[in-house]
Length: 328
Image (cartoon, rainbow, N blue to C red; front, top):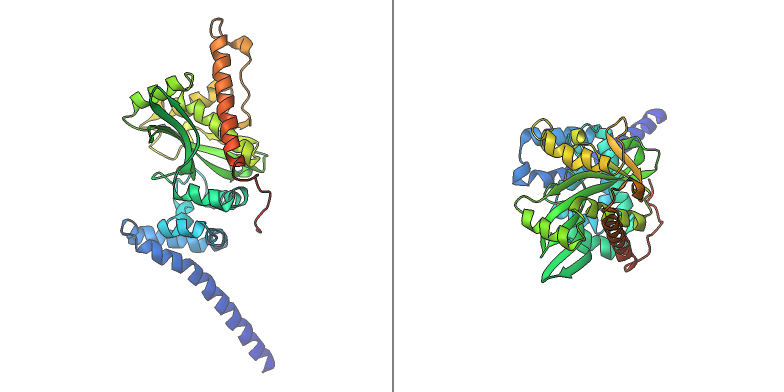
């Protein structure tokens, strides 16, 4: 009889724990369901299935995102804890386990790396890392949450002209194993794109930035961010694995934006379709540059180094990068 009572008590405790786990998932899902754009029985069923089939990861995501200032970001965007359940989250072809690991790792590390006041500002809007005033124009490099295309990267570095974003590079801090890197973590570049209708503004910015085009400019800024964060490797997505438009419909433009860009930097893709490079990205030898272009090449490289150092220095104005880690 005593054993039966003890068994019953164990079962009650287990059932109570299971109910708490279920409630921890259902509460955020109820907030998600109240969003009209998400009110689709099929979509909610898929999210529900994914959350419960990976409840360990989901609970860890809830635990980190309930910390300030993440809690306010989740209130504004109830999709945030469930973004990894989207099939093409970050890149095409990641498994659900890989997607969950990326979301969890990014928000853990961002919380550990940034002082709370700066993290709050980044979550609420773009912060300006560096700006240049020239010929009555205001050019800036800013950083903030990737919006509204938030499944193609968690954070965006933006090139702004007079307060308007004309070009962006989106990245996420991910564990190295998901891109077949031996590094503990890498900066995964998953989106490089100009804003439609802003060709003239991009030309103005390129001229003002020592003729450095937006893609290498923002890559220099990203390397500055990596230096501040203590991250020594980046991974660029290949065109075929980019999570945006269908590859078959935009093959030429995507290959130019991703494959050609990284290849011109001397970075080769690995077997998984990622362009891995140590940071800083090594410049090509000047001996390989055509005569008549070397002086201009030196000037461009010096300008990009200035951008890199300026973006790294921005974070030093708030606090030194913290080395504290969150518990697993």
